[in-house]
Image 1 (cartoon, one colour):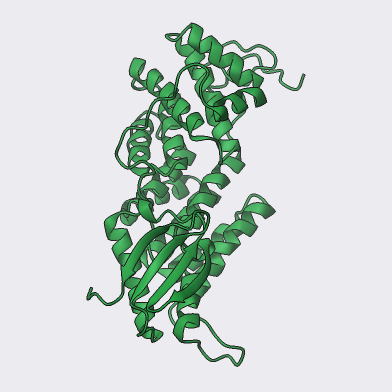
Image 2 (cartoon, helix red, strand yellow; image 1 turned 180 degrees about the horizontal axis):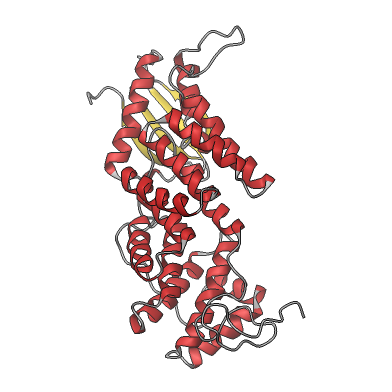
Length: 365
């Protein structure tokens, strides 16, 4: 067997051959890999840009519903068939619901399942949150449960909740640089740029070549509007990239800084002259590091209306002030590109065809 560890590196508890999680503290036997940090970074790089830098909670401030009990939805049954170990551990927890050791192991398994499958069904997310909640109810300062709850909240873009759990965890383990970096990124998502820069500075003071921290710092400066500083940091971050994949993914963000730099054209014709009209406006949308990757096409099949079609763009989850800033930029771009005949922009979801939002261009800001 590959796994020959007999003691947990976190709590020194006894481990049997083949165990993936410590039954005493719930920690994984192996350390968290850099690929995990890149997953979180990938989410951040897609979301952040010059127009807005935060995302609202996926479920707002409402408490997420607890998972259904027993044999329920098809999605959960499919998950059970695919992962017999998860099924077996779920039964163990159901048989001994007060056993914290089993709850910790089960929570760790669910956390790994969510990280390895970003499109995991919501039931799995709710089950992980419910399991972690049970641990924290019994042990409010359980470090493993706190950081896992923070990570799950971060991955689900529930940033206010992630902030709370990261802060509670960092009071216990302030030397966890990965958690502090993700905490800083959460601050950026919530618009607290100076606080984020301070936290990332603490990480880089201890580990100057920390790629996630340097990348997050670049993204934060970009969101704050300091694109020259953002690009300087991004170039440094690329030199610390742990893999070709990480370098390629972050290079896309660096390229977006060039597109949004002052004086960069919104679009150009083959002759090199800046475009105007709808083509010029669409060029602005495509150049936006947040909206651009989600943008599919623009349709004008109704007089006075311009439909902007996006794929998986969380319009409804933007906080009011972030949406206002985003819309303000679009209004300005529409005016500069001479869209006088366009009275409103319609934001359409590509998958459902439903209207997500309507922006009236005739209204004064």
